[in-house]
Structures are given as structure tokens and as C-alpha cells.
Length: 365
Image 1 (cartoon, helix red, strand yellow):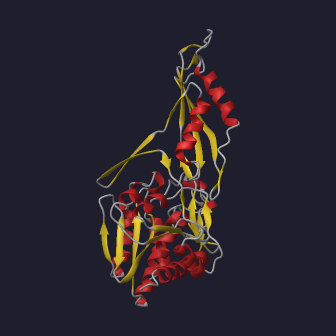
Image 2 (tube, helix red, strand yellow; image 1 turned 60 degrees about the horizontal axis):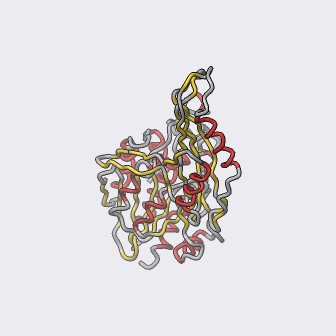
Image 3 (cartoon, rainbow, N blue to C red; image 1 turned 120 degrees about the vertical axis):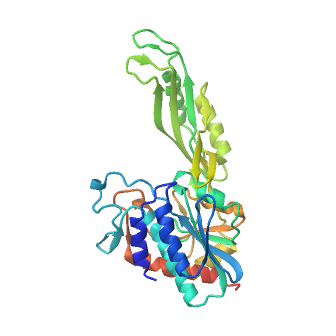
């Protein structure tokens, strides 16, 4: 298999969230060419499996990408799959089509060497909009271990903080800005901001400091000569398992004073599946002493696993009862930027890394 050609084809197959069809077609053809049993579920997730002995090890990642923005802002066209200065450029190169292509190439290596164990590849939809694809896949896949290919510079990862977006809503009396108005909701919002400045959510022993930052203010109506009847403050809160979403929301309610705290709900349609869930993406932390993690670290000759700075599909995949290990090529700092690119050397190394992980974790075969 020509892994680099597969990656170029994937970059060229534009696949925004919930419209992953072009990328799925490229990947399905590659999996079928390897002789794998392939199926697409109701959400549009792609699953290919090689039956064998021992536990099922599943290589997984998402097919969707964030918007590229203005093409003129990129050094190369974002969907060209251009190679420049020893790296492949384009939207999705790092997040995370490089990992998907490397996983398929690793599967090809394992099949060629007649690896006797069981492994699968699960490529999901809609990760960038809340994980609708992996949430659905968790209802029917049952591997022992997932290897999730989010970018990590090829360092093994064992989890990340969660993210929740509380909205603080303040209601007042709409009126003319030329008149006195004691029910201007912006004053209550300002008091809440003052309380938020001193908010301490503590730290988690695994994921570190919990944070809660104001990010947006919206007023209604929005006019410079009108006292709004409603003001809304958006918070971006990152938290570990110890404080949990419940602890974050309790702190937000204290800061809100007389304001109301609400967590918006997302509605995402993927395939024939309608998914609805609150804007709360939980943390996931695999214990440092987990035996599967230790086996993976040994296979990669690494001392300790790290933590991603962003949320992933890991908590939804873990609902299957499987361990979730992270390992992917690419610099996370380049994801979602107009400088997104993947060094070809790192891409090649990822192919070998995924094959080693499947061999080690499926060693019981």
C-alpha cells in the first residue's frame, strides 16, 4: 500500500463535520483492498475488522475536519495535499487524517505478516461537533483496547481534562439608554465577572489545574442606545474528574448571584441518527498503573504517558468498557490553523508505531 498517496487522497476528500462521505469512500476502498470485513453503521461510522485470536485491538480516529477558512491565508491550498519542506500540508493533515492513513498502512503490514490476532479500524464522524459518531459507535463496538490517533507527536497519551460551557443569564428591564434604569442586567453581569476573577476550582491530581474563563457576552436587544433586557455571559471551563461537571456548575451558580446558569444542548444529525447532548464533554483519565498502558509504553519504549490539552472521543469510547490509549502523529499546536502540516518522517514513524501497539496489546494471540 502507498500510504502517502492514501493520505493525499484523504486531504483532497473534503469532509466537514456531518458531511464525511468523501473521506469515508477513500478509506472504505483502502480497507476493502486489504481484504477486511467492512461495514458502515447508521451514523456513518466506518468499521473494518480482521478476525483472529485474542483480544480485539481497535485503531480509531475521526474523519471530519474543521473549516479551512480563507484559502488565501494558507501557504498552500488547504485541500491540495501539497508536499513542502518535507511535510504534507492541508486541512486534516494533523487533525487527524495523517493518523487514519497511518492506521490503514499499519493494518496492511499486519496482514502481510499474517499477524494471528484480532484487530479493527473504527473511523468515526462528527468528532469536532461533540463526538456524535463515537457516542453512537459505543453502543455496538466491543474491543478490549482503543488506540485513538489524536495528535501527540507520537507520545502515548492517557487522557485529558473535560470541558463544559455554562451560560450565565441575567434578565433586567429593557429601556431607553437616556433614562435611569436600575434593572440594567449588565450590572449583575459585571458583579458576576468580579466573582469569577477570584474563582478557584482547585487542581486534579491527574489533569492539573481546573480553569473557568469568560469568553463571550451577548445582549438582547443589541443596540448602543438601548438598555438590554437580557445579558448572557459564556464561560469555557476545563475540569478534571475530581471536581467534575457538578463542581464546576456549583461554582458557576455561586458566581452568577441572581443570574441563571444554563448549559446549552447540541443537536447533531449524522446519517439516520439524531444525537442530542449538553455542551459538556467529560474528562478521561486512564490510571498511570493500568497494565494495558504499561504494555503500550514498553512497546513504544517510552517511560510515561502524557495528557492532551484538548478534549477527545475517549470518554465516549470508554463507555464500551475498553481502555483508551492515545497515540498520533503531528503537532497539536498546528491543528485548526492555516499552518497545518505533518512531517513525512513522523507519518512514517506512526505506521510502525501503530503496528507495534497492535502486536504488543494483542500479544495474547
